[in-house]
Length: 171
Length: 222
Image 1 (cartoon, each protein chain N blue to C red):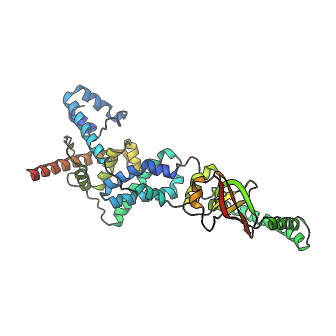
Image 2 (tube, one colour):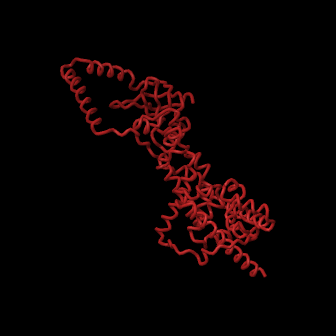
Image 3 (cartoon, rainbow over the protein chains, first blue to last red):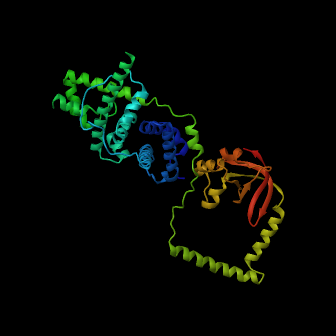
């Protein structure tokens, strides 16, 4: 083990929470998110030494988790490339989501096509520049930005709808 | 740049993260001039932070970290030098030549090989079964024998290997490595945290066909 290679336990301590939150936001399943997180570190233990720049470890881990997620989806044969209706339409309204709880938010995120969802979750959760998000998702920067803009627009519409439904139920 | 164009650009702007990204500079300057745009941008930033904070409250299941660390696969590093076929062939030829030279003397009952064998036999006779105290480095025997890995640079890997039950040993100052066995029990749990560190142990020397072991080991100084 070379001196430049990050210590495994230290790496787990530093990033397992971020990876789990990313995985959970993608899958909406505790078991799947935990499996994805563990599988990602397992792959690191086997292949991490191939990474020359230790500073890129987090991006490498996020990329690997996302790849594993996509593979898992393909295996489950639930993969679809159909974006949600209205995905190309952009709106710039704001939304009062301060009252929305995290479960409602995750439910809404789950309705968004996974291509948009992955970009959106990284946009919200991680302090990554757009270029870095593009590297994680292995797509061009322009595509990242349009996916985020459209995904965000969809999310807000879904959140507003969820709040309205909740208010109707209460009323 | 009009208001709508500025909103289009700023719709993905994250306060504090994208401040230095030049693609937002002009639209941000426009927001400085336009109060309505500024108010809209403020609300955008607030919503961004609300969602971000909420996603960050996703709780991680208890024990996940321990599970990941505990079930880490043990990976033996591969030697980085790739031997070419002709290098291997040359090494085999050289070894065969040297062996032939010593075997010739051995058959005749003379020469350095037979003398060394006699000396080793004498040493073994005195060492086998005797109780000795050895001060040396705690080794993960698997990595040491397979890849000659030891020392502080390998401490982390050695600790993991020992913790996971691979054989633990000690390297004496004369360079000999001994497998360490306690009184009918493994010493892995006691020694994992001392991987690559110097300790003192006491035990009975056992050896078979060149393989050395310290039996009934007691830990004298950690």
